Length: 251
Image (cartoon, rainbow, N blue to C red):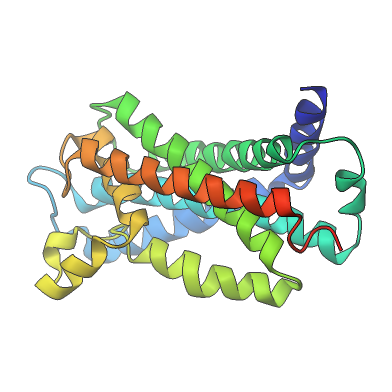
């Protein structure tokens, strides 16, 4: 367990040392989204009865920040280590592949949750958002950040160059995040796109997280959590198998 704790500490320290880039910058980005969309649409859109669009938007932005930053942490760490060839210093010590997995995913979760908390605290200056079911909100943030941390490990293992990692993020992670209901309810979409949204696992994370605040959701939170847990289990098993085989890590 010492090796797990040491690797986890190393990964947390890695993003903490550049906290302006890894934590403050995403918070400011989310704040800009909030300022722009709430200013343009707050007087014209009401998704839930009695809930302003600004209030509706905040949980989506918080969860989006959690997910994107959890992915960025594990993926960027691995690709940097591979490109600079210092990944060998992680692979040579007697660290089990499951310890490698847990350390990278846990550090990604820490960064995602810290950024999400920062976005939430800053957003509270604009409007008050109720937190009716905090345990539901925490559960979706916890498992959502874990899943994106795992996806970051997969992307970091697969990519050989920064442009490949950027492609993974720009063509998979970002579209799935933006099309998950961060800025809207899927009931505002045409029927075809509502159906398509149900195949996006990020939608269940966002919708379940928002339920924790308002007690209202497009899908029952139990079903959403079941989908999230199933995705997490499948991705975990696949990633552990990749690490065990040494795919693109041991040549």
